[in-house]
Length: 273
Image (tube, rainbow, N blue to C red; front, side, top):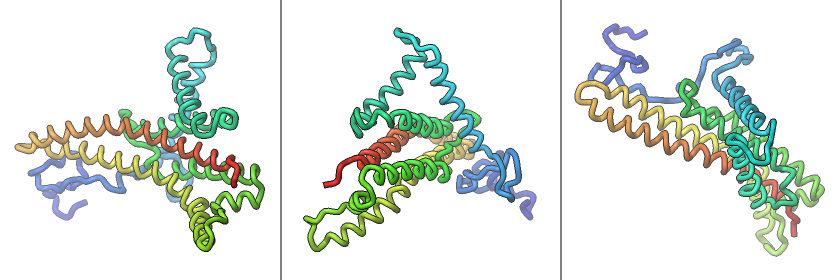
């Protein structure tokens, strides 16, 4: 509590401009949630982001189960939407990147990744949820880790140890004297930087997008006082614009994540010359 009872705390919902309180800017505290179950101190708990991830998984499985449990030659609306999404990823991402012959076996994985990431992103604009699960680094990190393990194992399986070494180091004897330096850079880039950037690219975009949405939403409420009402209107319009833009970014980031995944798989399967 504040020592001065007349001072309005910045995080209180009745805080408005000209009321003597500061702007309740979003920060890291906006990404922390109290446990819904369990004890946070013991690291065994269940919080909002876990609940959203679980619900998102149920929604995706339920959607595809409902769409394909009784498939028809002439599809209904739900089956048509599901087939369009599945076919877009299969043909537009997997086939285009890996190829039809090699890529067919990876279609279920890539489709699952795309819709899971997209659903986790979409929670940001869904009422009551209003938080993108992928704005918590652990979720993109685990997904990127799965892709990383798949890439490493496929490279070993296809090329053996020597071929794996050449693949991850970009071995090319035509480079001459700069070959050792180039191999060192490629080694660290592929084995250390690649999984990091794969996870951070998704995390950073969702983190920044959610922060901007919070900023304009809170500003709309904060400015709702006196002459500030005019500015609150502008901030509210920006909230709507940012929400629409976030819809685009959410789908785009899911697409980029699986596109990079396919690129890594293609690189693991490609013959090294």
